[in-house]
Structure formats: structure tokens, C-alpha cells
Amino acid sequence: MKAVAIQAFGDPEGLTVVDLPAPAPAAGQVLIANEAIGVGGVDVVIRNGLLGEHGFREGHVLGSEVAGTVTAVGEGVDASWVGRRVWAFTGLGGGYAERAVAPVEEILPLPEKLSADDAVTLGSSGVVAHFALAHAHFAPGESVLVRGAAGSIGITAVQLAAQGGAGAVAVTTSSAERGDRLRELGATHVLDRSGEGGGDAPAGYDVLIDIVAGADLPSFFDRLNPNGRMVTVGAVGGWPPADFGMKMIAAFQKSLSFAVFSADSVTGPDRRAVRAEQFAAANRGELRTVVHEVLPLAQAGSAHRKMDAGEVFGRIVLTP
Image (tube, rainbow, N blue to C red; front, side, top):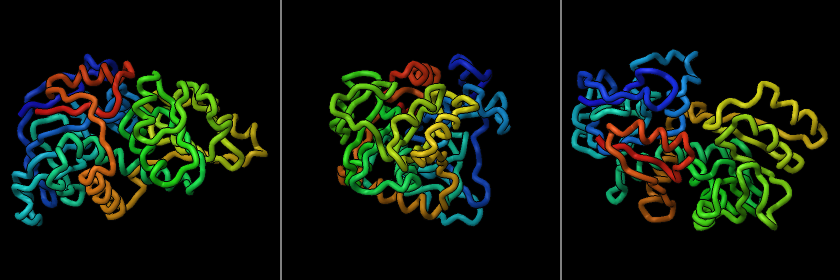
């Protein structure tokens, strides 16, 4: 089968189409003929080489979520899965391919009207957005700032905060056009990437969901109200400075909080329940997904270049 592997860490040019043996499902796994493959921020971080200490090596096939049809099952898996359209989490790799395997506990049937493209746009990002707000102890009436809101996690977080009764939902983004699109999804104030602007935007926020991290993360402690909580769920802007916490210590009397959040810390049944609810909501039109572009699998490098350039609003989807 065709797949896209990392031949050299760093620039997107290191992504190469390769021929690999088709996988076979092991015990407890299913084999999926992929219709759609999500391109996520974690793929960019892995490709950049920032997670080398976690054992990623040249030849690694990126991709953590796919949607398609189950074509085979491994030992111990109910054969009735064969022929069903599903969303699947493949782990931290294996998705950028014509076929992929996934543990049966990490697959979910697709509602009839939900497309494969929409499924891989919402499947992982929606769960992160939901539990990140919960991790921040977000409550109705509180003000929320989503930093880096133009990606699929940010877009879902904006909608969930608005639907959850936020007093204000501010976003940082790179252009007025993106700001207008985010307003359509529930944002009430649009700021620039540094957190400035917005006219009548709140002076401070109770909750800050950060998808960017990077060198500017410390400055966003200044955007928090007393007892404000920042939760970082991604690092698409790179790692923050090693001493970033000093900014929070300097504002000791404000009792600020900082946390990181990974969906890996949530139990599988809880992730599955929230994902099923969100798929149903999207199927009813109550939760919107934004697919930036659909590209052939062979153009994975182009997808990553667009991600690096900050051109993507929503999610890029690859198709075999």
C-alpha cells in the first residue's frame, strides 16, 4: 500500500511517499480502508523532531486519526464490524496510509449523515476542546480566551464555550477575515496574535485555552483575571521558554493557575462518550466542523507546508 513516512525530520520536504506491506489486524484490532485522514498539530510537532525523545525514528508514518470502512478484524473482535464506516484513533502514527489498523476500543461508528472528512476534523479535536474547558473548571458566565483559534481544536473550543454560556469568548487570530469566520462560530471579540486589540474586549479572562505555546506564552499570563486558569493543549508554536513560569510567580497575588492537558489522561470510555455526543451533535448541525482543504495523500508535504505557514483555517484532510 501507499503511505507517507518521515525520511528526515525537520521541513515538510522530509515527508516521502513509500510502498509498505499492507497491515494485518492483530488481536483486538480492526483493519480500515481509509477514506479520510486528519492532519493534526501533533503531526507537525512530530515531523519537526520536537518529540524525538519519545522514540520516533526515520521511516515513521504520521497520522493519528482516520475514517473509513472496516475490512477485517483481528482475533477476539466481533466480525459484525466488517463493512461498517468508522472513525478511528491509530495512536501517534500509522494514519497517513491507504489502510490502517486501530484497537477496537478506539473506533466509533459514524452517524449516517456525518462525512469521513468531518469525522477526522472533529474526532480528536472535539474531545480535546471539551476536556480542556473542563480541566480549566470553566463555568457559565466566565470569560474565555482561545489562543490560536483558527485550528480545529480552537474552532470547537469557541463553539463549546459559547454554547456553555461564556460571558465572552475572545480569540487570537492572524486576520480580520478569520476573525469574522470565528465570530460566526461564537466568538465575541477578535484579538491579534499578541492578544491585543478587540476594541471593547475584556481586560482579562477567567479561562485561557492555549494551542500555541511558543516564545510568547509567558505574556499571556498578563491576560488572566485574578484566579485565572491557563490550559495549554498544544505546542504548534514550539516549546515555551524554560522560565515561563516566572511570569506567573511575579503575579503571585493574582493566584493564577497553569496546566497542560492531554486527552491521554482521560479514560477511554469517557473519551468515547463525549466523541459520540459530538458526532451526534455535528450530524444534527448543532456543532460545526471546518474542513480547510482536501488533498491527495501524496500531497501530505504540501499540507504540512500550509500548516507551517499558518494558512490553515480548520483542518486539512488527506484522501488515499
